[in-house]
Length: 116
Length: 400
Image (cartoon, rainbow over all chains, first blue to last red):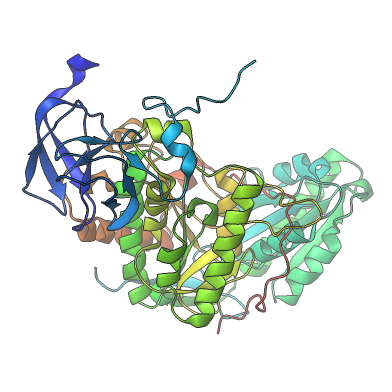
């Protein structure tokens, strides 16, 4: 996995008001991320390795503040998120669906489902 | 994009078709083989049918709406002979719409071989009767387009659906009709949807459709989000819902229509295909992509925009399906199945407006008769299921 991650990549920002953008390729920690779409021209340094299709914070988001994508809240920060950080289940929760924050961070699977 | 016009077929209810097809409808699974054999090697004959022996009002309403679709000129209904659904009554209802229609039972025609031969003969006569249907000029204002997504990945909500949404804005601004659906995939967006309603009546309809979808999701204990969605980068149901709703563009929602109900006037419409609660609970909503596509076509969509990320190889009968992907790799890997690469907005090679314009050109070419990739490959998947929905609130077919 680590070998496939590039030291620079692009992230797509869908709406001007958003505080997150979506990575178009896997990036390594400290990679330079160029913003395309509505935030065209800006760039930010990744604070974690982030996989393609996942979100990067465009600036710091205080705990409790809305995470904005498409110009709307997709949930809220469950702790302070710094600029460049990976935004996902570990630091962002739905305002609607309580279940999602208990899911496995990598697979998204429900830990409580029994297979026996 | 320039104004586009092309030649269509004028139907008795005033709607205009972009194809002139004979629709073969079978009324029970037992008649499926014969129906397909009748339509085999007849490029203008499409097949749909209902598998159940017990009839279902929703399924009959859906099949009648498909038989009266603007792209359909004539109907041949084929039954086995002992099922509940009556092919003769289907043919009667279609004839009342001003279209030629015929029907027969296999049991009264001596079995497989002779029924196929008889069906081919009737089909040829029906085709003959619609060759003279009046040709009329059509433009964007005569077009109804439906949109749906399936086999989605993270590009669908970011490129595929937003480009379709931008095209929808463009189509609505030119007097056309646009339909989007999948209300169970709009969970968490009650306020967003309410805010887009055109007026109080539309707002009431949008609220009711949303509340039913939420109640459905609670009843089946499932929101429409899967481990693969989370693993792919989606964090919340709101995020997934916003990506799905993006294909509805930004114009006001005129109101909510139900399955088999054409929009009463142009503009953007939300299609509610979720079953109404009944003695059998809800049943299932949108068990597969094809079911949703049938619902859109039943509401009069002459063209379907289907957005995929990971890839999909379905098509549709009656209304051509244009395959859109936001994933450039999927486009390259499945190029014989994909009509449009909306991934051009992600790599920066096109803006949303430019991509929507390119899509509009494909829609215009399709309306003018050029086959889409799924049409070219012969894809005509259909699905008619048992479902319960109360009778549509508006008189079907009144578009004027």
